[in-house]
Image (cartoon, rainbow, N blue to C red; front, side):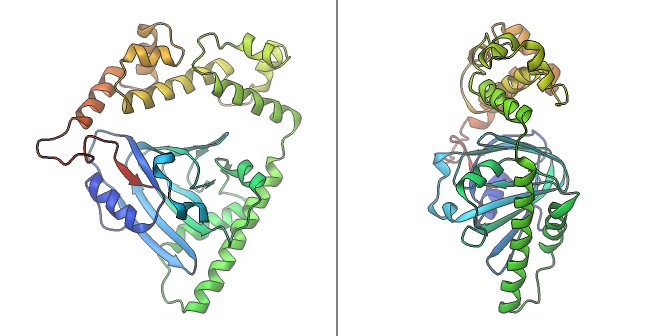
Length: 324
């Protein structure tokens, strides 16, 4: 691990210097802040190892840079767990797993205290058709088997061993690594060709995501909108981690938590915005899911956004721009 960083401002500056595409910081845990950054180059390939505390961050139009349109970002988790949301994809990542990210598009990250490696690859070196990139972005690539395992193992080790290369050797080695990444992505495309049930489930997931604020979003309404029975709808999700109702509830709670951490709305207003008609019921669900109550998160957010005496505008009063 590189030099330990104990404050978010220094972390943001170090990340900016590393070249990681910028994000806006969201929630971080209330404990001691500890992070680290190690960046290495191999020809046109840049690898950055990040040690980060538990937290959330996101990228939107405010973060846009012209240079990000020239890169692909591949993230690898080596310790802890992470969730990456981009487009219609949501990747739940465990150690060794990878995910492709388009740095030029909005993305949301959430993770436990973790270590991960970010690989930045020039688009001219890793050519992806727009349709294929859209299908791959935000999709989990398993890092324990097949081509994904080779990429995962190489990326994990390379960030600390990239020394002693002459210029030509570095370029040729980078080309080999990028080719392996291309093979892993191609294999994922083959796996991702949906069967009819998967295609229908994807449509249902998109429908749910677009209507989370509808308090009447229930399985019967979803089934009717897709011309299927409620029984058929439940069967689509019987091998998934969550039932339809549990998925709706979890996604609403996640949206509420993000709003409470980033806005000045009241708890009741946030709950109502995301389909919870009864604030007391929402508060019980929130506490049961996250282990702390919504009021505590709201108070923590308020404390972070109060500007300290003598602080410069934009440092503590505004959303922190960091890199990830």
